Amino acid sequence: MQVSAKSGGDFIIIGKKTYFCDQIRVGKAKTSIYLDGKRFIKVPTWIINAYAQGGNLYEYLSVLNKNQDRTEWAFMQFITTRDGNRLYRYCSNCLHYDPVSRKIEPIRPVYRYYTFRKGVFVSVTDDNNVGEIFSLFGLKVIN
Image (cartoon, rainbow, N blue to C red):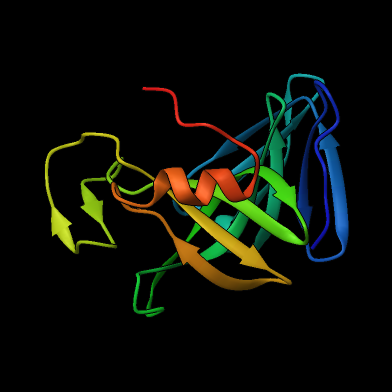
């Protein structure tokens, strides 16, 4: 899927249809789309392919661990693309569960970066290789 977020324009993609809207409230089970301050439509969250909110694009992708085992599906924030590779950010521990380490811990945001090429998982970062993955995209790690 090739989509891009236009500045300030919120939208949601369900199947092949795009809905431009004023606001999106993404919930675990249901998502509400608002137009003119009123709820326009409410849909099951799992049917959403992607959405843009506040200038950020989120795509529904499989979360995999280093063994390429699918642990779940989640919305990942699109960061950038380079040479056909797409870089996404996912907060592994924002919901108490880190699918990479498979530990349940108190909320302490741990960001993992996933690389996909042609929609296929390529790699996931850990504390040791984040700089290497970022350099492939021309990015630098700032502590």
